[in-house]
Length: 237
Image (tube, rainbow, N blue to C red; front, side, top):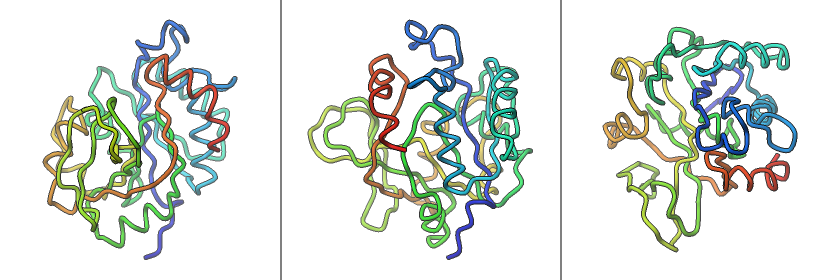
């Protein structure tokens, strides 16, 4: 099925305070922590532009206006919108808060402090082919103790989510990248909630799929992972 990434909205979660990173980054918003001399979100936006993105909505709270001013000036080729959380809404609440700004029928949601080099046209095509309501990107990892695991069958149907546990086996973890049909936002509850813990479990067996990829995964949420990103991010672009 035709998959035009240029006719989708990209919602990027930018509300993280970066509390665990303040020892190495100071008080800047987490998505603007500098990796190899540039804010992390700069790398992410450049990659999305290469993938065909034209419209991005930044879901921000902490220092939202300074984030928007920086990126509207730096990425003028994007239709860049700002959705502001006046109080913390969680990952799900932040996405739903941005729903009035949506323009297109299909929406990508991304964690702004993570990066995986995904082929977005292929991802959207898989979502459309399956007539899915929601699709997650699952990243293959060998050994895992830091992230929850996606359990799916051979067709990609998501069957369960497992909490963090230590293993040396091959697992698939969420890359923090989602594809939604726009109508799904009407099913989301009001107020503060987690998309991962409060909403996705209720989607199981309801046209909810895992799009599996074998690609690197970067999460800058801790000083240790942030240091790893400093050494490895450029090689992933």
